[in-house]
Amino acid sequence: MTVTIFVPRDAAALALGAEKVAKAIAQEIAARGLDAKVVRNGSRGMFWLEPLVEVRTAHGRVAYGPVKAADVASLFDAGFLTGSDHPLCLGLTKEIPFLRQQTRLTFSRCGVTDPLSLDDYRHYQGLKGLEKAISLTPTEIVKEVTDSGLRGRGGAGFPTGIKWKTVMEAAGPQKYIVCNADEGDSATFADRMIMEGDPFVLVEGMAIAGIATGATKGYVYIRSEYPHAIATMTEAVEIARAAGVLGPSVLGSAHAFDIEIRSGAGAYVCGEETSLLNSLEGKRGIVRAKPPLPALQGFLGRPTVVNNVISLASVPVIMDRGAAFYRDFGMGRSRGTIPIQIAGNVKYGGLYETAFGLSLGEIVDHIGGGTATGRPVKAVQVGGPLGAYFPRALFDTPFDYEAFAAKDGLIGHAGITVFDDSADMLKQARFAMEFCAIESCGKCTPCRIGSTRGVETADKIAQGIEPEKNKALLADLCNTMKFGSLCALGGFTPYPVMSAMNHFPEDFSPAPLIEAAE
Image (cartoon, rainbow, N blue to C red; front, side):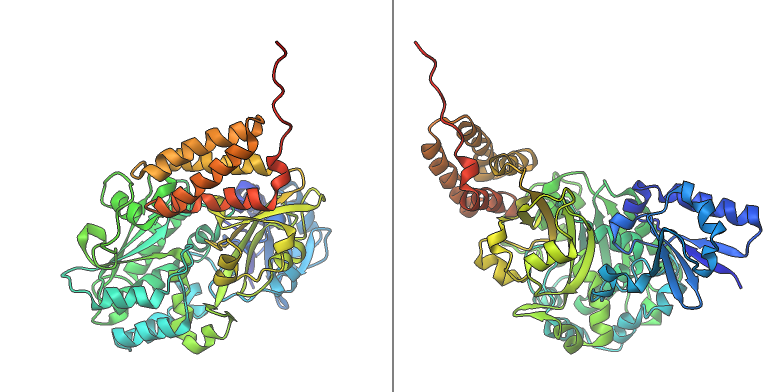
């Protein structure tokens, strides 16, 4: 019987040498005349163990990692095709604590299947949600998504069902589903992992959205810095089209839906939905004033659903298992699961899917294992470069949209960046303003000018020039940007700045400027 060996094709694993490992394994198989094959799967999301090599055995999949090309010969010598012991052996993959403690719904297949095998996808319950959707009316589909409590996983947390209902009820000769895969936040990689490791779940989610709203065309706008995701999604769409999952008759039904892959133009602001739509139309990626909402006048002026990758990829399991099943996970108005991405100065960086409600301290200290340097955790930024910095005093905050908002924070795309006690929070606040100044589309004055003045003011504080006056000025600037900016880039930049000032005031009190003697 042919033994299957899994080596990830995920970009993070490739960056750590997975390609060399795969070639070394193929060479050993050939040289030893063994009956084995290599399957390139997605990543399980345990990046400190990548490249993670798995072998399918009679007892389940056995993991080895992190594996280097130089380790491969010794693995074969130890008999790893039967799951034998080796210094790199981690035991059964599903029993690794980081993985075992998760609730994987959206990511249930990621790292398990061959990403481009539709047979694999079906074997692991793929297309069940789409098959059910075809048997329902659009109103019934929208109700199921609404009742599940699914909210936008891209940052705003807007109820997905309400957005779909608006597009479903809107009049128009053509409607569109646009997937926002312009994953630009620091410490975020969930979208990329899905697109590289389980692309058909995104295809399925978009097709369900199309059937629910009456849209027959979808676009996936992927950041240009994700070449592997672009290639995998392009191939997955072609495979789905050839198999009748996409096209004029979705799975043999009366519904038509097709998808086109588009590459982004490298601008952070194109993660904002109206900038993305302008870019998709071939225009400069600048923010549109709202109203009109994209749900009514979006792509090419037509009714358009704009959803994040994880929002759409969560729909198939909702349709398959039911709204009540999904809603049972989570807390408050935050229902279902969230793929938390743990990064920065942390011991165990990776993706951890779990129900809403874990405390920030549990995530950082127990799941992430504290800092990689071994020094105390000073601050944690949640929600990308525009997220607030939380000190240890706020580590009891549950991972929930409303709980974070109550502490002047935001979950955003659920990326977590950990900093140890060597971090200078004044420099971090300055970085937030500088980032905004560089990435601003320039359309509105508070963002375009306010961020530039913010950098200058932070520099004056660092130099000890009238620190109290300039701290007050920086806070006033943040207030103007927060309430005066057209979009979240300028509107959310105050979160990291004000949280750094409020929670780490000691870093904003440098030694006063010494006047030169006359």
